[in-house]
Image (tube, rainbow over all chains, first blue to last red; front, side, top):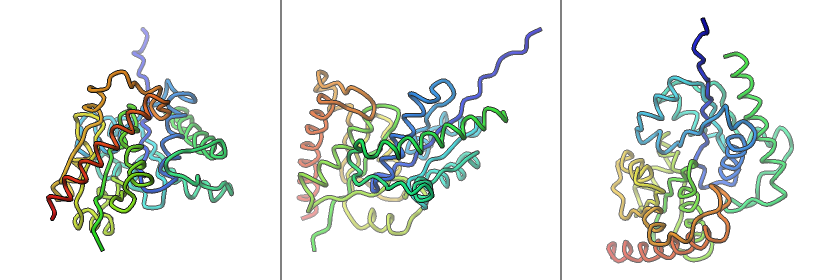
Length: 138
Length: 134
């Protein structure tokens, strides 16, 4: 008899980051993973909805593995996730990641341009690698 | 020195409404009302960042939510602050259905036209809350 197939989805939780350029980068990198790199394996969790007490989002994050993506070392997304639903499987901080790879952060929080593509790719690939790691381990 | 109005968008990432709210506040801060307006990261309220709490408690606050879930407004209220004004992008969109954004983050020309309309509405809202303060 075939066992029922249970699809594992990974929840990607980006920070809001309105005040900082890295916050905008967070959004573009996460959307790249959701729309292009791992569309069948990932869903996004809207941080403000999650914090506002939406049970669907909070239960998802309790049941499925999550990856938080924060623009800065304040780690609002990681801390909120841990407080409301449990420790994220991976926690990525963009400012650290860019520093390690010597890639400059975007100069504008309003719009990203071609020069920021390398940073978007770096972060998106890092998220995708963590998604693969989770799916491999199960 | 005159206090600033703190505008907080929800920045929802699942639909374009969240991005339109975010872009509208950047238009206000950088183009239309640089002297009046500021923003901060909404998520910092949840981690009880002291500077963010002080900014929100000490100034008038307008929230910009993408949809009727009103997450930005609720997050501010959870932090113990009653908002002075609240707008929803979806309501502005209902009055301008021809201005459909092209993508969630890449809004395209129609999306940015709607952003501009929203920014103008927000500027009116800022004037309204400013008058209330006087």
